Image 1 (spheres, rainbow, N blue to C red):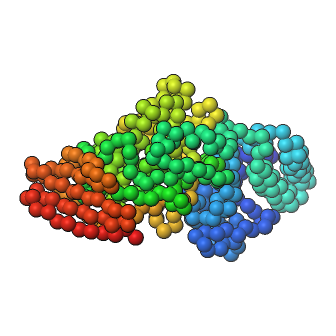
Image 2 (cartoon, rainbow, N blue to C red):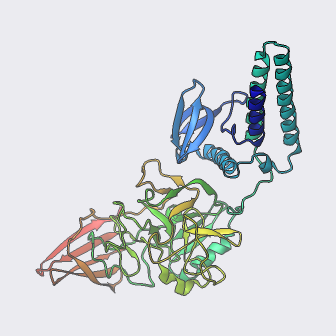
Length: 452
């Protein structure tokens, strides 16, 4: 009777799918060619854990790699498998996820009856004092085969309440974000991206004033135009494993402001909150090593001109709103990525404290293989270009003024040890930059550089 009881327990567990649910492809399917950082691997997908994808090679060896290390086509197919398996684990009732797939239901009934037949055969053999090994073997095999079959069929009608279906973004929606600043930016689009062109210097607000931790950079034009324009995906996809900004994207932009200025991770490349340590000006920006001006927080001052439109667009294709929802109401509950599904669309929100606008990149992005985490950056990424060597931090300096002094000419004023000093610079149409540095002692140093 104990044997019968154990078999019945196994039968119930198999039918529920809670015990034998498993992942991956099996020997009954053809192996897949995976491209991992350009290296071809043939094998089967096993599972995903903490952003790592595990592949069993034909020789039986198991390897793991980050999902983003796979080719784009591999990422697409793997993301579907991972998302499906996560759905199974969350709901823990595979059969219910199969919707109206009557063919699958027929197969399940068939295997259940086979298991029942094996159980009956086992009882009969025991009563006749015969060797029951054949029934054990037959039942175990069908139990395993049943589990494989019921857990590998993808649901045809499964839906979730938290993840909306994504469709192509209407370019006119993104166009509204940049319309108030069309004197500073040019926009265009194709079937894949919405492009934003700008010279990289804001015209509607000042810069640099208020910085107390300064690397001695100043803003110069960057030429984010033509093939070097900023690219916003028109067909966003949800990432299978969203990447946190606490450990990723500490190089390059993650979003674009309405005036075409890039927005970087709130954490600098040392993992420090750039705003908290005094690296940012009154508008949330500063200059990088290439004298490229950019923000590190979503600048909420753009709400004044945005109306009910987003105040920025993330490079994963999702919009960033300010302190209100698109309909003007107060912000609803945000998810762990600092965004949410609202009116069947997904977007982020900005605020005045960390994480400021994005906690983790909800959308799927391509990563630059030459920049490992945490300084990995999103591709495509417009490139900045400096004209002079990067300088070091000037401890104790505070920027007190910054002003336009002529055509293509600026003056930055800072104080150090209670005394004023200046960086005056100008550039001509040939790309020749002249820097005049006036120290706290009043002495001047002139240097010239040519932009290549």
